[in-house]
Image (cartoon, rainbow, N blue to C red; front, top):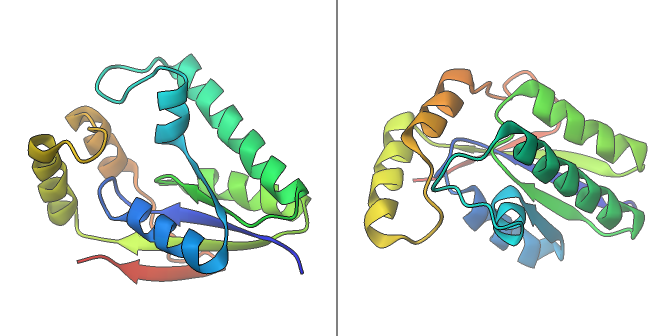
Length: 156
């Protein structure tokens, strides 16, 4: 049976990582997270990450996705995947390796995502996202409404 590449999609603080953990446990998939790769590389989300460093982080994430698929393992890409172009890139990785592909769209309102962002700053339960980065994702977010292979998960 072919492995599946699951691409999470949604605003920061939508609940993607929670769903990724639940899904990984249910289907036995590996998880690839940009936040974790940045942490391994000594880059935090509390400060400015230069574009060339983001490019290296993405390259490493894509390498890990491909490595999992080559090993015939299902894998979850826990990332905002906020543009169609980003999702198409991951979709092509799956196709190149003969894997199934599924977008898991975690839908939450901007107001709820922002409320969670602010609450996280008090609890420090996960890495922070700078306000300008959050606003950039909100401005440029392209919901996967007209894309194939989308499963919607509302987070309350």
